[in-house]
Length: 123
Image (cartoon, rainbow, N blue to C red; front, side):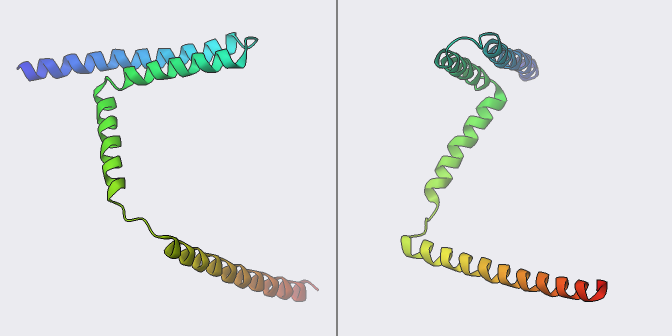
């Protein structure tokens, strides 16, 4: 019974936290518009502070924590990737450029042929 009560309490607080996040973003948007005559530097700094506060509050929710876990796992997976060396990258790039040029030439030829046939039919 305690776990159900704890889950509902957490979800209620999560909803309040998301309302706070939306309110912070709304304050940033409205404030940026209201203080349009102020210096751009001050408005950008205020937006950065409000965005950081919104992110901190969002990361306190269950979905925010799940997202943070996803970011951590992604960084671990990126470290496992075997990146190609310079020679492999150059060879792959040249192959892609060659295939693109060949496809472009084929499409140009097909377009010219269809255009010639249509001009024959139309007169």
